[in-house]
Image 1 (cartoon, helix red, strand yellow):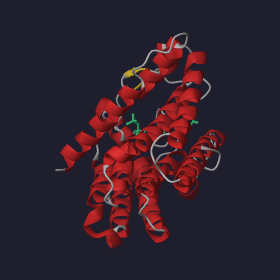
Image 2 (tube, protein in one colour):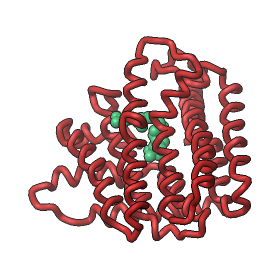
Image 3 (cartoon, rainbow, N blue to C red):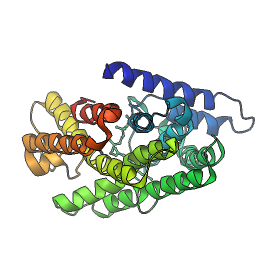
Image 4 (cartoon, rainbow, N blue to C red):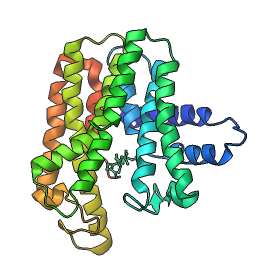
Length: 293
Ligand code: GRG
């Protein structure tokens, strides 16, 4: 059952990350406490699950890619810490707990984010037993996904768009950078880490990942509206509390649901050449558009 698979993957990555942040670091207690707080505080672990499901499509077991799945989650955790800072979204809560800068302080949160990003690259470039060219390609792929051509670029596009009206193409471009790039990297890294994927297979998987990356964001917007609606009893529009352009505001709630479903269908049909080997990836695609949180 997919629910069991999801739980197993979540427990696997939770256990792995907890183990990595288990040691004492004299003199660096506060920094490590902030890093540990942000990495081990829950989260759906969608990106590591994608890395696991992707390597499994090539017959590689999850244990071989823990470090890669972990590295992706470190980048994700760093992005959330920095996104929550007063200079960005200025959020007090993340995953139902105080944000890192609230639980610690702003300077510590900035450093914890910086440290997690660096640590991700240390892990991926040092751990495991990949051939040198695989390791180099994985490192460079993750760097590009995290950097100005990926997630950080998406955040910059988002900031620059404040107070302007984005059309659907511009909104998609922003999300493809901001959240899509790391989701695509999660899938590519699983396949690369198997050392069994050819270029055509990598390209096919990237098509799949582009679709689910966007579907993830559409569903996230839908969930926000549904939560708002269940709290206030009325639907919010483009001028919702978040004051950010969203798919439900642009397409209506039904239109957003239809887009999420269509992206999921596209993602699933892209995987046809993989046959039953990609069943987990198909299930993850469905999970992404069916999840309620
Ligand atoms: C500040 C460098 C920098 C980048 C920020 C990804 C990002 C760019 C910010 C995250 C803020 C955000 C709310 C983005 C929308 C996408 C999203 C829903 C992210 C949260 O990811 P989940 O749902 O979180 O996977 P969990 O808590 O499950 O890990």
